[in-house]
Image (cartoon, rainbow, N blue to C red; front, side):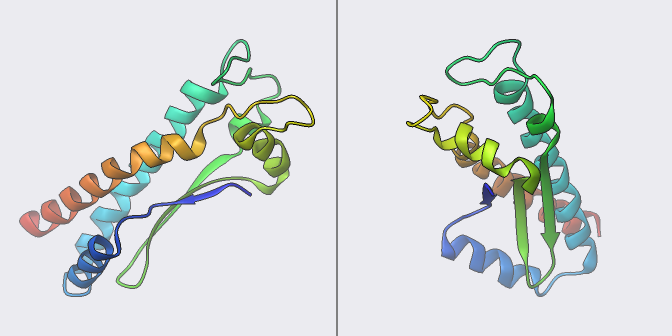
Length: 141
């Protein structure tokens, strides 16, 4: 399974967790909604940029059966004990997804899906939007 999670510095996450333990439930609701939207946005970015092409290129897979395309999902958990945005492929396409993410020298398939690289570039947006969600909830509460 390709499993990527939001990772930030220990200090950033520690500060955010500490703040979240002292705030009202509306903050968790706002943060969960914001990260759910961001998760969908990331999935759409992956589908449009890497998984839905008319032909296979160095960075894009041709969309044939839509199995991989439709198997990309998100899981968002926000509470005072857990802050997680997880993007993953369903287990039914794990092997196929791994081949296209990491490549296969035996089959002469280069890595081309770029899920990890795109996620790395996307994480600052999640943190920025998460902080904005907390500020909104506190301001509007």
